[in-house]
Every structure is written in structure tokens, then in C-alpha cells.
View 1 (cartoon, rainbow, N blue to C red):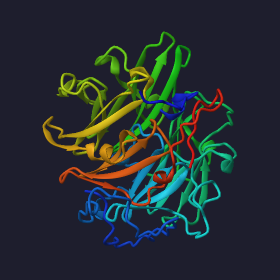
View 2: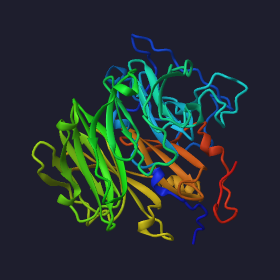
View 3: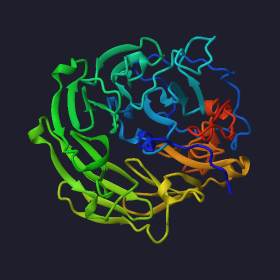
Length: 447
């Protein structure tokens, strides 16, 4: 039996399309990123499973520059918590630092031009420490709330080469030493949406003072033990989903359509229409439809105009457990299982050796097996799908323990079935340490 050496004190705190090529820069010529790395950028990844990554044609004309990008949404992975797509490649936030991923070469580098920098802490120019990362009109935007921002959620912009970190505005009205409800703001079309305290949703224009923010919704917290919000945008509509647990321990998801004012915000759907109690769900909204899945269930299609739900893919009898990732064209299922030691209720998972690809007509259109990863790395515990882009899906692989700091990063070409280990991934240099320490820290990770 594997040893698990990490205990989370507050697990709720830590509650994607061809692959991007950068052979040709777009006509508006955004500045290519300036990178620095501890290793030669031309060095191949160690023992890469295939000779080179997928190399599709450039599709820069289709890049969404409105801020929120649906297909770059990350549902579950812990350490890689934000990603956005630009004309020149992907930008990732991993363990507090901003990285650039070249989808053509499969190379990852810290967005920091200082050759002497180790890229390991908040002294690095790539430090953003943000779960929000957006691409809007040629700039990257992120929200920081550490000591750099006096522990207040603050929006910053940064040029694509990693220079000119600029404070734009605060996205928090009052300082709170402790918050029980967490929610990442979104930027869409020049407007920001954020959660104030534990229960109030506001919107404010980009660059506008926080005093101009407009209240859109205030939740009644009197009978709630836990609440976790997530914002979404689809066309001109903006949504907020609340995963809540009431004081009896009953869990459900409640979806709201946000208006221009509090009087125009409406509840439009509850998960109770599908199941009695939902502990872990994945969902995606596109073209006015909510696609909804929870582990061990079927995949449902809910028309948000009518509220009518229909079974899109019957999975309950074929995939007993797994995680799901959505794009506008495909639904991807990974057959990860609940951790055998800690059980289904822990939220910890293991395995994930096959990706099943479905279209939105419910047809199985392909499968890719990932067993070669586990064969090459016997200490690999779990694969997590991070984001997908057309025919490529990116995986974070945890080594030693679930959510370990020792990780691998893979690009999988769904059409070819190729599995490629991304070059220069920082987590690959972290050595797993299973030393047992004192009571508040049952385990630790170190490099």
C-alpha cells in the first residue's frame, strides 16, 4: 500500500481548441516572450516518449482576446492553476511563477529575463502568484493578493515578454484576515467580476476604482456551511456557479445568470434536478447549454433557456469513476479512480491511464492510452488533464503522492495518440520526499 504523506488542513482552499504553434507571428506583432531557464532551452526532455511534440499549423487568427477563455479553463489540477492562450503560445501559472509554453517545440520557460535568477521564489520577475490569468487586447492580466499587494486582491497587467508589471486596480473593498469562501475573478470584454467577502458578487470596469463597483448578487449564508463560487462567460452572458453545503451536510450546485444590476440577476438551475447530493462535479457552458458531470454519473446536457435536461452520454454503466475536461468541440474523460487508501470521499485520486474522446452528439470518436507514462515512471501516482486545445490535451502527472510538488508535464495528440514529455518542466526537477515530520505537517516535499 502506498504511503500518503501530505495532510491538508483546509482542502477547500484548493477546490482546456489544434495545439498552439508559434511559427508565424500575427500581423499586429505582439512582442515575443523573453525567457530564462536554468537549462539550455534547446535541451531535449529526458527520455521523451516520442521524437517531437505534435506540430499542427498555426491558428493565431482564432485567438480569443476578450479576457476569459472557456477552453483554457482549469477544473481541478492543484499546482498548475491558470493558463491562457495568445498568438505566440500559452502562458501558465505554476507554483506562483509565470511560464511560457511553446506548443510547437514542447518547451517551457520562466518568463523572466534575468540570467542570474533561479526562478524559485517571489524575487523572480515571473512571480505573479495568481489563480487568474487572462489575455486581453495584447496584455496579460493576473490578480495577486500576497504581501506584494498588501494582502488585498489586486489586478495587474504585464507585457507578454514579462516586463512592465503594472498595478491596475484593487478588487477587494475591505481587508479580511480570513475568508471561508474563495473565488477567482474573471475579466471579460473590459469588465471584471469578483466576490467580495463570502457572499457578494460585484462587477467593475477595467481600470475603474473599486468604489464604482456595482452589486449584482448577495447570497444568504445563514444555512450554509461551505460555499465555493466560480464565474463563467458564454457570448454576452456571464454566469456564477455556487457549489454549496448546507448545515445538514447536503451539497448541490446552483447556477445564476448575472445581470447588469442586482435586480437582473436570476437563479436558473440547480443540480437537484439531476441528483440528490453532489460532492464533486465538472461542468462547461457553451452556446447556451450547460454540460454537467459528476463522478460515476452520466453526462447531461441542460438547455439554459428552457431548463430541460437530457442524457448526452450514458457513462454510469461503463465509466464507474473518472474526471472530465471540456472544449467547444469535444468532451474528454480520464479514467482516474478514487485513492485506494483514503477512499472516494477524500477527493484524492490515482491512476488515469486512458482518455476517451466524445463529440457533442455523444459519439465515442477516439481513445488514447497513457500506460507508457506509468511504465516509464513507476512512482507516477496520477495523471490530471489540465487543459485541451483542439487535438491536444495537456496532462500534469504527480509523482510519489497526489498533488506532489514533483510533477511531469505531457502533451498528448489525440488524433495521433502520441504522448510527449514537455521540455524543461520545473516540477520534474523536484525530488519527492516522504520523510515524516511533526504533527501539523505529516509529510513534506523538497528539492
